[in-house]
Image (cartoon, rainbow over all chains, first blue to last red; front, side, top):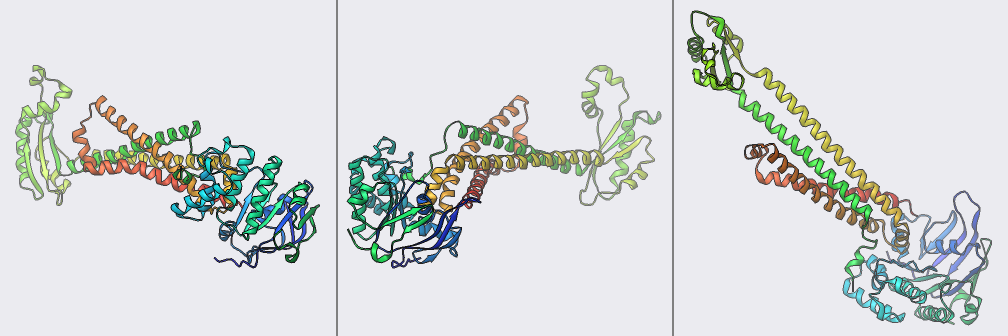
Length: 235
Length: 295
């Protein structure tokens, strides 16, 4: 399956509810242009996590239409979703590293899922750890690392397979300011290399320091919408 | 770098729960092997008895049936009559010493036994493919007082029927034990899925296909089943060896009845191998079923 790079993610009148509960996302229209960088903000309970869940294809909307890389999810068979998910890198607030694996093997996981050859995998993971400044801890148990280091391992894992889209949920929420800045610089660098980036945050200071278009969620509605035109370009 | 270890994207099955599962599979394999062994042995013994007695009949001459002629002489007369009948290969009266030897378990070997009137016996070998008509033989032997012909069919049929019933029960035990072992594996796979729900969810979200995740459970189930199966095999071999030694079973005579040595070893190894294979399939089925519920 070859994905159309001119289409990233498009939501049309998307709604989502958990079971029989109320709608947590309502009439969300969103068109993430390739190569764009967006912030996603909103109060707790506004639906940020749910929107991210739909963006990284962990769930399907209860109504509306979601298109990912030119594929309409409402008609796409379930068996095709894993390959589509591998085009998306996800950085979680709580890192979600696998404690029984070394740092190296955590980062290598997406490459193994993509059946990358061992020789190429070693090189790619080595380079990625070097890029996030963790080349000396490849064999370490993730639990022995600081929060900032663990977050950088999570970032390395999210981007090692060169995803088309990088999503991050409060990536600086559990780290100090200096580490947060360092993480954002990594995201900026990825953006410069052409990766589409969307970062959910509560941190208004970061948004001021790294100005990009902002998607604002309030009570399940996306109140400020980004268009491909105003979100593109490199800051 | 521990790249090989990453093949196990889920933590290796370990701890008390795994030890318990290994023990359950070991006991199930032990039971299955004993049931299978009993089934095969009973079948072989039944076949041996059936084949061994199919061509051997006996004519018994009651000692007290005639005061004029001793049973030994009447046995010779009966043998003479039988020799001329088509389908009878051989008819030989047994001597007094041979009859005493056969009766010694019941009468003992005291000198007083010589005073007892002993029955006459004729050992008859018949053509198993064209046996003579028993009713016709009875008519012919009517002229020998006290002569009764026994083709052993009655009690051989009973014994074979009993052996077959025991064989069927052993097979049923084998199947039930296999089913219980499979259920244990399915329950273990489900428990493992529940324990590692977060890891499974992460793998799912970063693009692992269901089959890839299920393989993690399969590998774990295979390892557990192989450990349990081989332990069960060793236990079963030890049990059979100790039983044969304790009850002084004629192993050198019984083993060839089960088949060639290589086939016994092959069947013994096939049971844990089948357990491992079935465990892998059960783990795959359980994990795929759970994974399909994910979006």
